Length: 160
Image (tube, rainbow, N blue to C red; front, side, top):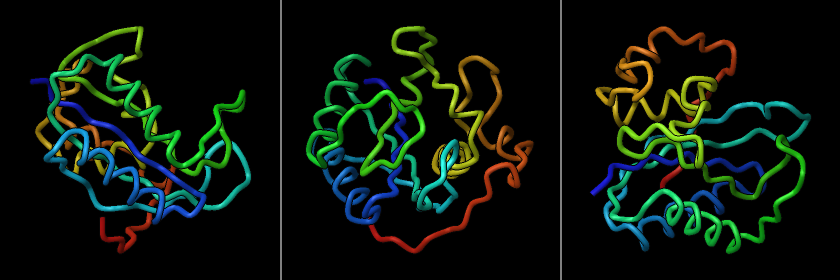
């Protein structure tokens, strides 16, 4: 079984939509490890703050099937795919890592892992010893070297 990590974010009714996303992941994949929830300002556009977390689980599904499951979860909250990369989202779930697979289609590991503190911090929280398949370094080490002021985070008390 592959070890899979996904990032979840929302800035439209975020507690409700993150809860729905996590519940659906648990329904589809069973045991899901979930990080704490972090608030951060919208990136790339003016909008409400996002709540973000990372979830990890094991699956026999290939990455393409996991992405199809993610799209079904997006459909449950009425998410419509638009041309805008940076926009308000009821729910955004991204496949971040799939074992140590390095791939262009789908892009794995997702660049967001090392680019955004709202992805790296919760990932390092639940999988500090996980080795990034490209850099060969642990997530905890990447987090230690990350500039947290680039995308400041606030821990939020949300029960999932």
